[in-house]
Length: 39
Image 1 (spheres, rainbow, N blue to C red):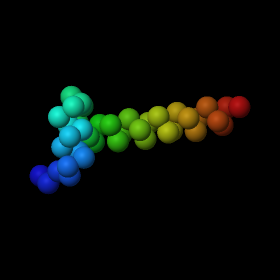
Image 2: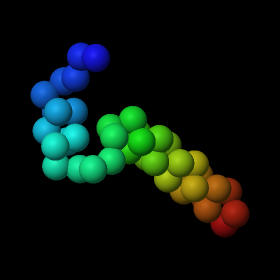
Image 3: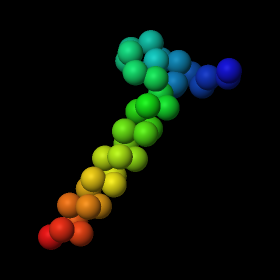
Image 4: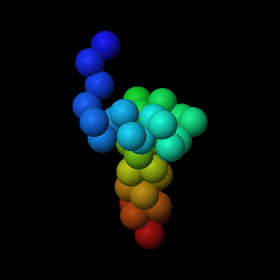
């Protein structure tokens, strides 16, 4: 699979796969939205 330089560096410094990080970001965004709705 083709990997960009940024993804390559990221994978080398972080044990987590790049896709997982993107998923975590989406989950965090949803959590923030929920908190805003509760207020």
